[in-house]
Structures are given as structure tokens and as C-alpha cells.
Length: 495
Image (cartoon, rainbow, N blue to C red; front, top):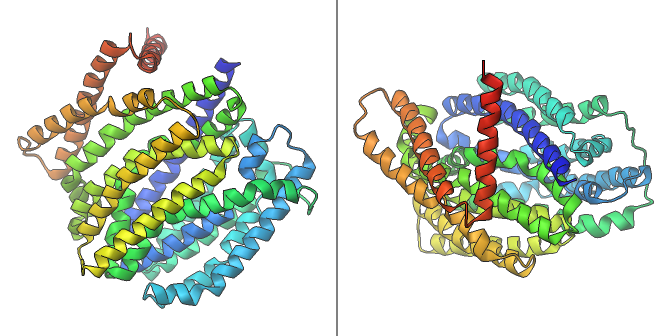
């Protein structure tokens, strides 16, 4: 049973990962084109627009999907009621956003945002019309059709967005691209699954008891992750907002491309074993052990190579982003802990605690940013440093939640989170020493240093795993996984 579930989760992760890599690769190419067509100050307006769009996208996926995945029974009445409730909630959210469009534009000192918000208010409604039958694929951990749909949508939207960007050279390309993407996903959902929802209110009470906290949690989670950029739009010029947002996107690429794709399959798997606390806790810690093997070297690597990353990847017009990217990479340290806590608390129907954690962090960010503004601070780097310092408080909150809400052994959890730091520091030291010796072009230097960093970290981390595997069961698990993978590769390519 456990082996079969692990296999399904692994396959689900691979399909998510492949789809994510393809769609994000297209997205990165699109972003690289956009940042060369727009100046930082122009991109500031586009950033505020994208934050708004993302909020609509969050709202269009909020609600009952998680409940349907975790529910033991998922009949037609439940599916139809979920689809109908989603439509009501999203229509309401669209009306509210449209109604406040003028106020939001006034708050951010960007009058152009009013028309953007009015147009984008239809996005939640379009998203709610999607086929609720896709939930069956997630319950079965069958992510292949979902991955195909996301890739097809991205392949269609890419030329539309880029073409409009070349023609219009402003943020309207992003708006129209997002609308196109939502329409394609909604229509495509009926092609890849035969289920046809009908209007029903039979299970609304049952669904709302769960989804009201999911709605609040998703909104507060999104605000927590974006309130910094939104406040910067009021306190600093638009070019600073653009620099911050683009730096954020590139600084978090390792997490979004390697760790995040596992979210859906991890939740579906967790929902099947949430009744078995011992197995649940074991899976949580093993997941964190693997996650931080990727996160720690990513954070230190981006910090060490920030100068080359900006010049080679983004272009010299974005040199002001160099210190910002380096600092923002440290925010990834909280992401695996936060993602897994969200997954487990949703599965255990304890979503309200996520809302409380988010509200504490939102309040902290707002207070710190307003204090800096009152002190007449106008440096984006200072605001970013303050945001990074606050992540320490966020990690502390997350660990407290693991201890209090899940009764998890923090010693075991902390060990797997901290263990990769030593190999990571060896990698950082090696990169800094090697960088001054290279005399190739900046692009070649970046490639060499990236591969050098990967090899040094992998070698030193494997040596550490070998040394501690007899006393740390989580690293024994990773060691056996590595050995099995190497053996499989050897057998596959043996002549």
C-alpha cells in the first residue's frame, strides 16, 4: 500500500515537474523578452498589474477543490454543488474587485490600473466555469492530462503575449495574455474530461464549512506573499517596484521549478494517510530532508552569483537588481516548511491556523514598511533587507505550528533543514575563490561556476550523508534512494 502510494506520488510529481519545466521555460523566455522591451519604470506598472491578475487567479482557484480531494466520497451531488458554489464566489469576488478598482488605482498612484482591474474582474468568473470533473484526475494522482492541458495553453498564450508585447510595448500584453490563458484552460477542461457539471445547491452547507477557511487562507496567503511589492508601489517609484518584482521572480526560480511542482501530488498523497500520524510525520520530515538539499545550495548559489545572473540573464539595464536578487533568495528558506504545513493542515481540516499565521506576518510586514516610510527611507535595498529579516520570524512561526499543531519532533525536523548548510558553505567558498580566477566571457563564467557549485555541493553532501546515515534515518532513506537510482541508471545504460 505504502509503496504503491509512493509510486503514484512520484509519477504525479514527475508529470507536474515536466509540465512545470515546459511552461516555466516558455514563461522565462517571455519574461526575458519583456524586460528587454520595457524599462524598469515601465515594468513597475506591469508589476502592479500582474499582482492584481495573480490575485484574481488565486481567487478563481479558491474554494472546494481541496475538500473534494480529501473527501472519502466524491459523488455527482458533491461535484455539482462545488462547481455551483465556485461560480457564486467568483462572481462575487469579480464584482468586489471591479467596485474597488478606482480606490486601488488611487492607493498605488497608478490611474491606469482602474481600467486594468475592470477588465480583469472577469478572470475569476472564467476560471470558475472550468470542468470540476478534473478533480477525479487529482484524486487518482493522474496528472498526465492536466499537464498536457497546461502545456498546450502556454504554447498558445506565448505567441499572443509576446506578439502584443512587441506591438504595444506595455502591460496590456500581460492582461490580454492572462485572459487568453484562462479561457483556454476553461474550454480545454471539457475536452480532457467527460464529466459535465450541472447547477446544484444540495451540498453547499457542507462545502462552505470547509471552503470559507480555504477562501480566507488563500487570500491571506497571497497577500502575505505580495503585500511587500504592493506597499512598495505606494512608498517608492514605479521603477523600484519593477526591480523588486523581477528580482523576486528570478531569485525564486529554483523553488518554483524544483520544489513547487510536487505540491499537488504531495497533497493528494497526504490526504490518504492523514489518519496515520506516525506515517504522516515520517513523510513530512523525509520531504523536508529532500527539499532542503535543493533549497540551501540554491539560496547560497544565487547569492554568490547574483552579479553574473543579472548581467548575463537580465541585462545591464537591470544592474540595480543585483543586491535585491541576492537578498530575496533567502526567502526561499521558509518555503518548504510553509508549503508542507499548508498541505497537512488543509488535509487535517485545520485551515484556520494558516489564516492566523498569515495575518501575523501581514501585520508585521505592514508595520515594518510603514515605520521605514515614516523614517523617510527611500532605499529599495533597505526595504528588501527588512523583508528578509522578517522571514526569520516567519520560520519561527512555522516551527511553532509544527510543534503545537502537529506535535512534530522539532529536533529531527531542524537537523534535516540545517544539515545541508555545511556543504553549502563549502560550495559558496569554492565559487568565490574560483570566480576571481576565470577570464572567460561572463556567460561562460556563469555556466562554469554553476556546474562547479553543483558538483562541489553534491560531492560534499553525499560524503556527509554517508557519514551520518547510520544515526539519521532520514539520510539513510536518501542514501538508499541515491544508490537505487544509480543502480537503475547503470542497468539501463549497461551494454
